[in-house]
Image (cartoon, rainbow, N blue to C red; front, top):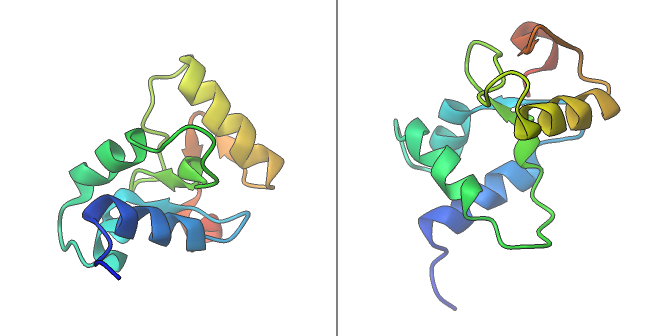
Length: 101
């Protein structure tokens, strides 16, 4: 069996994030064994195949901010999915002290 790719390691970490919780890009990088490669996490999530089950929307900036531009389709989708899981989003931000995994 082959070693998982960097992207697959990231996806595995994000799959482990429980419903109603969020993680930062930096947390995902650390947990995937990628050190300080937080900027790569968004790229890897952007490569998710069609029909995947990875809850990409649970990954936000370390300051609790949703990374997509306010009002964009992806921003609205992420906020909607988080709120459906009970995560409160106010002005595009999530309380990391309350909802961080």
